[in-house]
Image (tube, rainbow, N blue to C red; front, side, top):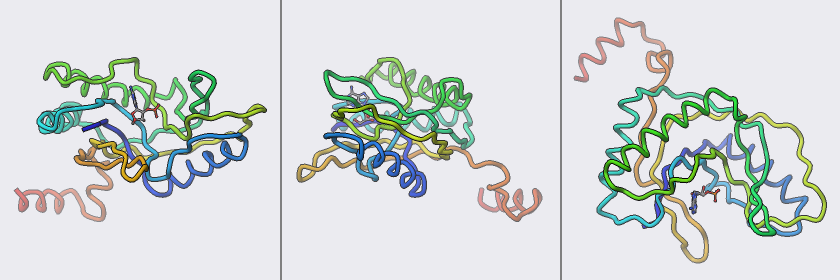
Length: 204
Ligand code: 2AM
């Protein structure tokens, strides 16, 4: 099966991404634009993977989170641009290269790829270039002009995604997910530290 590890986004973030996607679409002659439910950020592309490697990949994802003790964080998507592929363009949105949160994402990828290498599981090892693809195969006759954007997206979960063509439509399905730790304040909510400790003690 064709797999990748990704960060997905909530409906609010996806609808803001769709607005930018549509602004690009309005200025192009042709293009293959990402469906809202397919908008994601790829951390590791595994490609065709034997099904019997899936349990090991899930463990590697859980171990990466456990060893880093990563708390949920946000990434500011501010920068739209394109990769040129032959005479077509792939348009994306990304964070500024200097955004410290990108360093956190890169560290998470290092942990994941380290685990995959150690387990002998194949993946695309080209340099990590964190982006959300908005459209592929884009052709336009005049420059695409976009207003400045800042989309602050919560990064709170990593998912193992299966990619397949179903009835000619590209469908991504999350088959496993690991949550990043919630911020202390949201874990405790209205409780004080003592009652939270009691709850945890009861749960154990
Ligand atoms: P892209 O959006 O830049 O094409 C599913 O295909 C996801 O994996 C996409 O986000 C895609 O990035 C990413 N990906 C990374 N390396 C890939 C590769 N070698 N082939 C296909 N997709 C790849």
